[in-house]
Length: 396
Image (tube, rainbow, N blue to C red; front, side):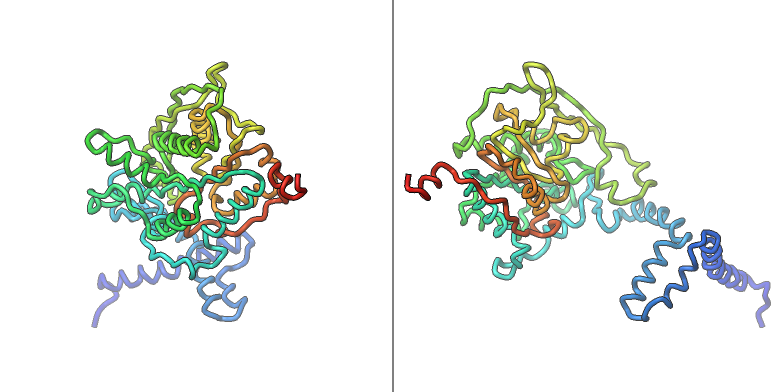
């Protein structure tokens, strides 16, 4: 017969003490705060599977023990297992990727006839193009590749010979846009070609290692490609406003690192040095600014915001496109809302379209499959008659 002095009994009593102490302390804290005892909330509704799962999630996230241990467990998972959590994929050293973007890249494509109308980017793009055409405005589409599409070799060493991967759904959408004669800038081809050309020399990354967004080099390459396309189509002629460049380096802790919501991990990582280039007017040295009377309206998401509206300002795609075309732009940016939200915002501000010749519409590749609010059609206010349509209507 075993005695209570046996070490096994000591472990049993320790375990039971921990099991009993955690909920007891939790209840005492809740009573002291006057919020009621959360454990009793299980009796507040019917014991359905959905209610029980919601109660379990609430208990897991709100208990003091979970809050105390979660950050240390998260740090251990990151340091030892290279696990970035629900939203982050840890790639090759110092490179991080957005997990939903990677899932989009690996997903099997849907055929056009099985896609719901509100989730079909091509239908929304065609509708938007036709509405703009009724106003005498051209549409140029600018899909920005996911970081993992251009840098699959930074995800894993097994892909070290790959320098660009086009997701099946993306390829299907681009083919449908070509078939419908929708003009777009093929940054997938531009960026992949730039990477291939840089194989023999040290490469300047087109994306930030810690961030979902492009680097200043990616910004400059995209602006040059868009400017070439606009002039080649004959939609825009270079203006007469000269801009110059000014070095404006910044330090950034990438948005992917913030997504982990782990201060312990963030404190252990260095900010990324970003060699951004600010665009300034050559005549007075003032940083680039939008102008309401511009011929081009740029619509987009956070890829249009980065460096442009945040630090160092006037160093993003919009400013660099203005420099390439020697004329200011007008812009409307909605973080995370490149698929639908930015168009809905435009519908509430029709003055943005006044005197416009071109709308350049940017959205990030992953929004093809996971864009906020999908790809709803948005009705612009009634278009004023153009000279050609007025002549046709009244027989002039």
